[in-house]
Amino acid sequence: MSRPELVDQALVSPVYLAGPGDSAWVTVPLTTVSGWTALNAPLVPHVVLTGPVSKSELRLEPVLEGPWWHVSHRDGRTGTNWSAAFDGSTPVELIAAVTDALTHPGYPLRQPVDPYEPLRQAGWTVAGGRGTFLSPDGHVRGSRNTLAGSRSWRITAGLDEDDPLWHAFLSAGTPPFVVAAFFQALASRDPVRRSAEQMKGFPRRGITLEWERRLAEHVGRALPERVEQLAARRAATSPPPSPAGGPGLAAAGRRLR
Image (cartoon, rainbow, N blue to C red; front, side, top):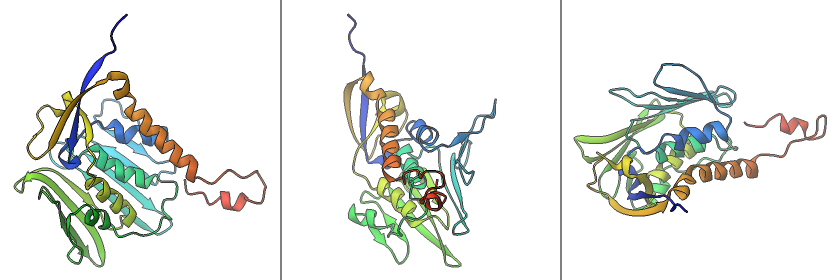
């Protein structure tokens, strides 16, 4: 009888210094849970996913300079458009926080929140009036630009100010609860998992790193479990279907997704 396969797994914190991870953490839930569609483009090294009603788009395109990840949404209810962009070394857990918020069944009717509150609770330095914030270790800096009353955010992570690991940008019009979801993931103290291969060549200064050996079967369950959790979220928060012609027909016609 063969022995179970074991693989090395790294537990890395803080998340913002953990390296990019696996892009499937973002793309697979969009297509399997939220009904997004991949636009096939043979021989082109990028991924384009669109939401069920073509109001949302995710584009992943490796480039030499500039962001790799682009998320955009056109909000017909409010008449606003917003977008987010992330460099290729941005941890996928941070990008997933944005796409998970965007695909929440209650979007866009969720209540406004203070986007800086997750940072304050995690002990970050926040100057709300100026729109700046700084992680306790000094490795993440954020700033808010205000133009004609609109706000956009720029976030930079790096071990040294003049040598950034990644940049992120959230445009004006990004809903506060989406910004808050990103900031909450950014400030999370929970370690994230990386394979030994994913840790190769990535800076290890400034991180807490622990190694463990796990069954390959258990490691392979991480993404399916994430998909199951998001599917359960959708099932728990989506309104039940109404019979055709029944009294709930008008309400069902206003379903968000």
